[in-house]
Image (cartoon, rainbow, N blue to C red):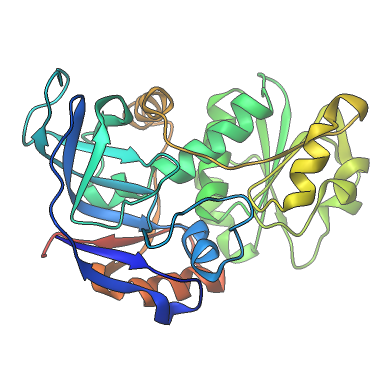
Length: 314
């Protein structure tokens, strides 16, 4: 089978399309024949070596966090799936979604929502579960609270807008004016153009700031936080996690998000999709072999939604 592997840290030149032996399922495992897998910023941050202090990928390793496809084989004691079932999943800590065949524990895999294409399904788990972790687990968002999403036109930002609304919050979205219609259509109540207005200098107050960009650390947001006073970021550094340890001592609670797969959480995401409360926006689709080009596009920060690699024709 083909897979995208890195053997050392570096630029796009370290990405290799390699041939590997096809996996066989262990007891309690399924093998997913991948139809599509998405590119996430963490992929190129791992590749560059920027994330090696807090994201572990044993080299040589296969990149990729989320996927969609069909069950190709099932191991002993698997009861929830049969060969041919359409599914989607997010990988555990060891990554490995950028491959034609991927082994996963049965409880990590969820039936694909019928209303999503394979490309849309592959684009959903990481962004949606990162948003869910930040809002529900870390932020403990409740109905009536006010959430600000900084970077609301990013994939995680768009998921955060929708999930915050599903949890009963009002949402202020920060993005460019060019993205206002898109983000408003996802449920944002108020919109701020980051190019003309600094939300952290404004008069509005928020229970939670969800930062998908990394340009407004908790110190810059402290004056606009009220109530729960939570700051979560998808772009953490070591300092973020050190500060997180001391949350009980401070008024502002700070959380850096590192999301890993959870079948139970993905089932909740599936329910939001099926009920029409969550939709996935795909920006661009690339052939599997064009992973370097896809990662470099992700690195520009211009994507409005997810970037997907398709294996449908492989």
